Length: 113
Length: 115
View 1 (cartoon, rainbow over the protein chains, first blue to last red):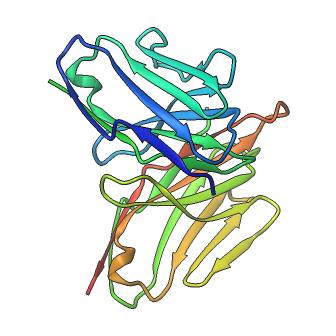
View 2: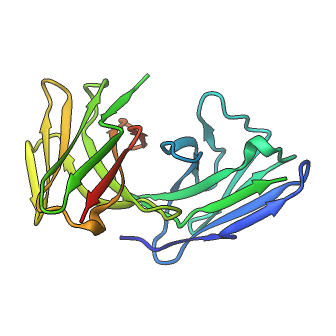
View 3: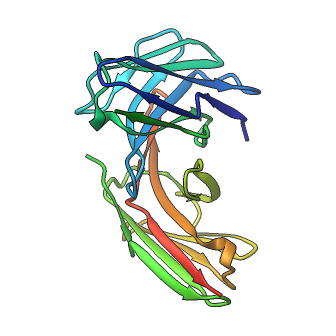
C-alpha cells in the first residue's frame, strides 16, 4: 500500500494558538485525502474529505472555519486547527484514498493546554 | 445517514481460541468492508477486506464473512496469539457514481488474548 507520513507526531500548544498538521504521501499521488479525529478509546470520526485543487467537504458538525484543510498538491494535505482549545485535544489521522482502500498516516497527538 | 454497529466492545479469549467480531451496517448500497487493527497510539492497519460480490474471504488465521441480505459482516480470528491483542474496527463504504467514497467506522472492539 501507499506510504503516508504525518508531521508533527506530537504537539502541545497553548489555548488560542493555531496548529498545522501535514500529511504527505511518499509514493502515491492522492487526489483524495481524508482527515479523521479519534478521541481516547473511541472510533475514528471522519472530519472532512479533501480533493486536490478544490475545497474540502466537511462532515456535519465539523466547523470548516476552525479546521482549515488545504490539499494543494497530490502529495500534501494540511489540517490547521485554528484557535485551539482543550476540547480539540485528540489524535488526528489522515488517510490517502486509493480506489477503495484508504492508507492511514501515523497520526498526530494534539494536546491543548 | 449510514451507521455501523460493532459488537462486542470488549472481548477476552484464551490463547489458541477463536475470536469473532460482528458488524451491522445500515446502507444497503455499501459495497466495500475493510477491517482494521489498531494498537495503542498507532495508525490503523488494514488486516482484511471484502467486497459485496463475495461472501467470504480468508487469509491465514483471519477470515471475513459477509451476509448482504442481513447487512452483517464478521471478522474471525482463529488460533489467537497474544500479539493479536489490539482494537479492531470494521468499516463500511460505498462508492458514489462520481467515484467518491468514504468510510463509516464501527465503534471498535478491544480484543485481549490471554496467555
